[in-house]
Image (cartoon, rainbow, N blue to C red; front, side, top):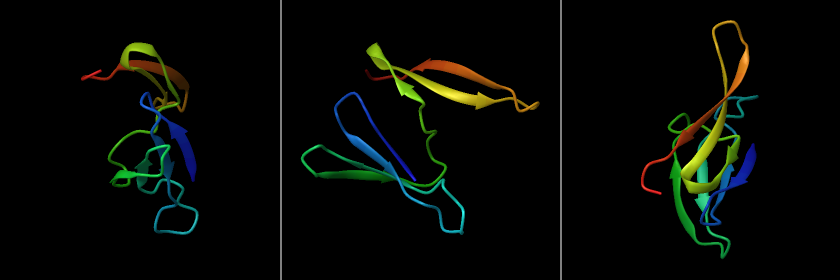
Length: 78
């Protein structure tokens, strides 16, 4: 289970999955004022490692040799 925030101060909470030990469940999105926005199904979106300015997000990815690298992407619509 984990949590994070986005550009518009929305709060994202990742729930546990359906199986014991599964930490990659659905992601709920709520506002600071406790208004429910919606839920991403498990596996539908990647969990960003960090948010940056101008729609940038950073992800930690692993390659076929299990080497980690930071990948920065720009989200559309920002």
